[in-house]
Amino acid sequence: MEIPALKTVMMPRDTNAMGTIFGGVILSHIDLAGAEEARKHGVHKYVTVAMDNVVFKAPIFVGDTVSYYSKTLKVGTTSITVNVTVKATNRHIDEAERDVTEATLTYVAVDNKRKPIPIKG
Image (cartoon, rainbow, N blue to C red):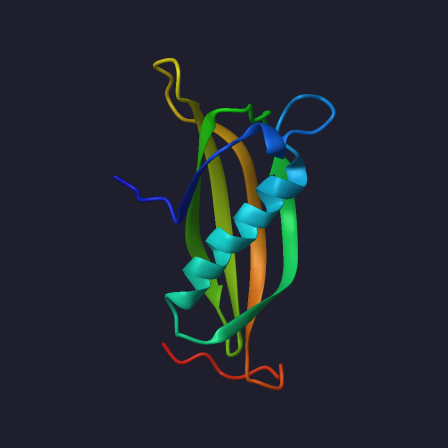
């Protein structure tokens, strides 16, 4: 069984004008889940340099439990590419997880002066 990097419950404050969860809220959680994946490759400061291929597949609703699953795609000298898959379930009905969003992110390890540094595994 896969364990999510992050799990949240969506609240009314997270909604947009359409009554679904605002995409920016989901993007911020994706970034957090991806950063947790990057930290598995070394305890460094990481900065997000790209968020690519973001696909919003289905809406997320107030009260949904949202799980963010992350996996490393590539580790370079100073950068890490991570995929984050987002799934949601309605907490009030017996529902299987549904795919809602997916993204690919790139992080770079940096020093205190924000200069790229090598990732040591």
